Amino acid sequence: MAASVPSQSVLESLIIALENDNSGAVADALGTGLDPNSVNAEGIPLLALAAEVGAVESVKLLLAAGATVDQGDGDHWTPLMAAAGGNYLEIVELLLGAGADVNAQTSFGLTPLMAAAAKGQLATTEFLLKAGANLGARDQNSWTALVWALEAGHTEVVQALKAARAKLVG
Image 1 (tube, helix red, strand yellow):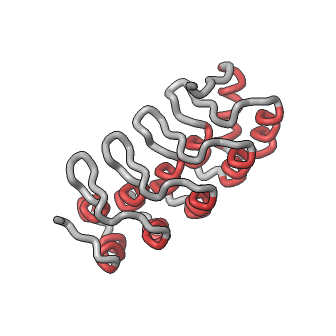
Image 2: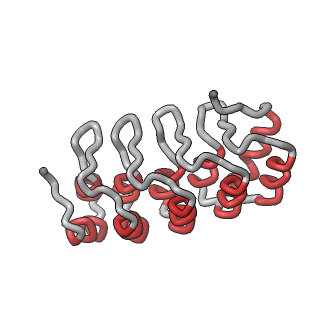
Protein backbone atom coordinates (compact mmCIF):
# COMPACT_ATOMS: atom_id res chain seq x y z
CA MET A 1 0.00 0.00 0.00
CA ALA A 2 1.41 3.38 -1.00
CA ALA A 3 2.04 6.00 1.66
CA SER A 4 -0.68 8.60 1.95
CA VAL A 5 -0.24 12.17 0.80
CA PRO A 6 -1.90 14.60 3.22
CA SER A 7 -4.03 17.48 1.93
CA GLN A 8 -1.96 20.36 0.54
CA SER A 9 -2.74 22.74 3.41
CA VAL A 10 -1.98 20.14 6.08
CA LEU A 11 1.20 19.15 4.28
CA GLU A 12 2.39 22.73 3.84
CA SER A 13 1.78 23.45 7.52
CA LEU A 14 3.52 20.27 8.55
CA ILE A 15 6.55 20.91 6.33
CA ILE A 16 6.93 24.39 7.83
CA ALA A 17 6.65 22.86 11.29
CA LEU A 18 9.26 20.20 10.44
CA GLU A 19 11.67 22.74 8.95
CA ASN A 20 11.45 24.81 12.14
CA ASP A 21 11.42 21.78 14.45
CA ASN A 22 8.12 23.06 15.81
CA SER A 23 7.39 19.87 17.69
CA GLY A 24 4.13 21.27 19.07
CA ALA A 25 2.71 21.73 15.58
CA VAL A 26 4.03 18.32 14.52
CA ALA A 27 2.39 16.74 17.58
CA ASP A 28 -0.87 18.54 16.76
CA ALA A 29 -0.80 17.26 13.17
CA LEU A 30 -0.09 13.72 14.31
CA GLY A 31 -2.87 14.09 16.89
CA THR A 32 -5.39 14.64 14.10
CA GLY A 33 -4.66 11.14 12.85
CA LEU A 34 -2.15 12.13 10.19
CA ASP A 35 -0.30 9.05 8.97
CA PRO A 36 3.34 9.39 10.14
CA ASN A 37 4.34 7.63 6.92
CA SER A 38 2.85 10.34 4.72
CA VAL A 39 4.99 11.77 1.95
CA ASN A 40 5.21 15.17 0.32
CA ALA A 41 4.39 15.81 -3.34
CA GLU A 42 7.89 14.63 -4.33
CA GLY A 43 7.44 11.35 -2.46
CA ILE A 44 9.76 12.23 0.41
CA PRO A 45 8.59 10.74 3.71
CA LEU A 46 7.95 13.07 6.65
CA LEU A 47 10.64 11.32 8.70
CA ALA A 48 13.22 11.98 5.97
CA LEU A 49 12.15 15.64 5.79
CA ALA A 50 12.62 16.00 9.54
CA ALA A 51 15.97 14.19 9.47
CA GLU A 52 17.21 16.32 6.58
CA VAL A 53 16.81 19.55 8.54
CA GLY A 54 17.97 18.21 11.90
CA ALA A 55 14.55 18.43 13.56
CA VAL A 56 15.36 16.19 16.52
CA GLU A 57 12.11 16.56 18.45
CA SER A 58 10.04 16.06 15.31
CA VAL A 59 12.00 12.89 14.49
CA LYS A 60 11.24 11.60 17.99
CA LEU A 61 7.53 12.36 17.56
CA LEU A 62 7.34 10.71 14.15
CA LEU A 63 9.13 7.60 15.40
CA ALA A 64 6.84 7.42 18.44
CA ALA A 65 3.83 7.72 16.12
CA GLY A 66 5.02 4.71 14.12
CA ALA A 67 6.91 6.21 11.18
CA THR A 68 8.74 3.52 9.22
CA VAL A 69 12.39 4.12 10.01
CA ASP A 70 13.77 3.01 6.62
CA GLN A 71 11.01 4.47 4.42
CA GLY A 72 12.79 6.14 1.53
CA ASP A 73 11.83 8.29 -1.39
CA GLY A 74 11.59 7.06 -4.99
CA ASP A 75 15.35 6.51 -5.08
CA HIS A 76 15.32 4.78 -1.67
CA TRP A 77 17.06 7.76 0.03
CA THR A 78 16.31 7.02 3.69
CA PRO A 79 16.01 9.24 6.76
CA LEU A 80 19.35 7.84 7.99
CA MET A 81 21.07 8.95 4.80
CA ALA A 82 19.58 12.43 5.15
CA ALA A 83 20.72 12.70 8.78
CA ALA A 84 24.18 11.30 8.02
CA GLY A 85 24.79 13.75 5.18
CA GLY A 86 23.59 16.64 7.31
CA ASN A 87 25.80 15.66 10.25
CA TYR A 88 22.85 15.32 12.59
CA LEU A 89 24.49 12.79 14.88
CA GLU A 90 21.70 12.77 17.46
CA ILE A 91 19.21 11.88 14.73
CA VAL A 92 21.57 9.22 13.34
CA GLU A 93 21.67 7.70 16.84
CA LEU A 94 17.86 7.87 17.18
CA LEU A 95 17.27 6.24 13.81
CA LEU A 96 19.78 3.46 14.40
CA GLY A 97 18.26 2.91 17.85
CA ALA A 98 14.88 2.55 16.15
CA GLY A 99 16.27 -0.13 13.83
CA ALA A 100 17.40 1.80 10.76
CA ASP A 101 19.57 -0.20 8.36
CA VAL A 102 23.10 1.19 8.64
CA ASN A 103 23.89 -0.37 5.25
CA ALA A 104 20.77 0.62 3.30
CA GLN A 105 21.51 1.60 -0.30
CA THR A 106 19.74 3.94 -2.69
CA SER A 107 18.86 2.84 -6.20
CA PHE A 108 22.27 4.33 -7.12
CA GLY A 109 24.05 2.32 -4.42
CA LEU A 110 24.71 5.19 -2.00
CA THR A 111 24.86 4.34 1.72
CA PRO A 112 24.60 6.41 4.90
CA LEU A 113 28.39 6.08 5.28
CA MET A 114 28.93 7.45 1.77
CA ALA A 115 26.56 10.35 2.53
CA ALA A 116 28.54 11.25 5.65
CA ALA A 117 31.94 10.78 3.97
CA ALA A 118 31.00 12.85 0.92
CA LYS A 119 29.98 15.76 3.15
CA GLY A 120 33.02 15.50 5.42
CA GLN A 121 31.02 14.58 8.50
CA LEU A 122 33.77 13.06 10.67
CA ALA A 123 31.80 12.38 13.87
CA THR A 124 28.94 10.82 11.94
CA THR A 125 31.34 8.76 9.82
CA GLU A 126 33.03 7.42 12.94
CA PHE A 127 29.68 6.65 14.57
CA LEU A 128 28.43 4.78 11.49
CA LEU A 129 31.66 2.77 11.39
CA LYS A 130 31.16 1.76 15.03
CA ALA A 131 27.56 0.84 14.20
CA GLY A 132 28.76 -1.64 11.57
CA ALA A 133 28.65 0.34 8.33
CA ASN A 134 30.07 -1.67 5.44
CA LEU A 135 33.34 -0.10 4.30
CA GLY A 136 33.34 -2.16 1.12
CA ALA A 137 29.92 -1.06 -0.15
CA ARG A 138 30.08 0.42 -3.64
CA ASP A 139 27.74 2.71 -5.51
CA GLN A 140 26.80 2.37 -9.19
CA ASN A 141 30.18 3.87 -10.16
CA SER A 142 32.03 1.44 -7.87
CA TRP A 143 32.88 4.26 -5.46
CA THR A 144 33.28 3.43 -1.78
CA ALA A 145 32.90 5.86 1.11
CA LEU A 146 36.67 6.34 0.96
CA VAL A 147 36.54 7.41 -2.69
CA TRP A 148 33.71 9.83 -1.90
CA ALA A 149 35.77 11.41 0.90
CA LEU A 150 38.90 11.55 -1.27
CA GLU A 151 37.09 13.17 -4.19
CA ALA A 152 35.58 15.80 -1.89
CA GLY A 153 38.91 16.51 -0.19
CA HIS A 154 37.82 15.57 3.32
CA THR A 155 41.20 14.60 4.75
CA GLU A 156 40.06 13.81 8.30
CA VAL A 157 37.32 11.52 7.03
CA VAL A 158 39.80 9.83 4.67
CA GLN A 159 42.10 9.20 7.63
CA ALA A 160 39.25 7.77 9.70
CA LEU A 161 38.19 5.46 6.89
CA LYS A 162 41.77 4.34 6.29
CA ALA A 163 42.16 3.70 10.00
CA ALA A 164 39.11 1.47 9.73
CA ARG A 165 40.94 -0.39 6.94
CA ALA A 166 38.90 0.95 4.08
CA LYS A 167 40.19 -0.05 0.67
CA LEU A 168 40.01 1.80 -2.62
CA VAL A 169 40.02 -1.38 -4.67
CA GLY A 170 38.88 -4.59 -3.73
